[in-house]
Length: 203
Image (tube, rainbow, N blue to C red):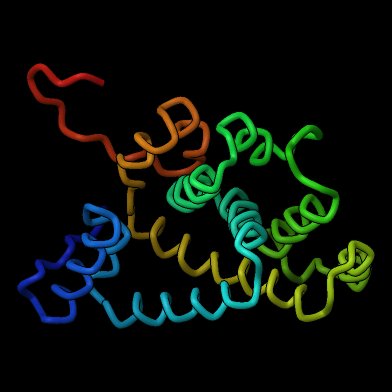
């Protein structure tokens, strides 16, 4: 991390944010250390996520986020959201194929179109045309659902770029969740944080 995370004793809000994160994850993720400088921003981000997720089915949200994170080369967000899909029963092999946009990825045509569109939003939103919107509508997506996809992909730009610009490394915990081989494949940008080696430690 390029900036020094604040200590919890700095303020009550920082201490509370750290404490809640540790309770949720079982450890203090690096993303919370980064946002420790402005806990109110993390609070607003969390509120935005609640709003976004309230209007989009969970699997679709994760696929949109993966597509956006892949385009952004965000290791942190790739690992975090792949871990969510893994927890929901998607196998490591299936995740590799989804991320690679392979023809045999376990996606239906609507999901594949959504991921391609979300990547285009991140890559160059000005390149989106009416034809792109019409293509999504041909897969039975409504105007409101298309808005949700665009909003989720666009929001990911804020979070991923903030973490990467400040040098926030993905947590070692994702290696434990996904396995070292898949974790390394998903780390498209910044490398995963490595725990200090200790005598007798096993890797």
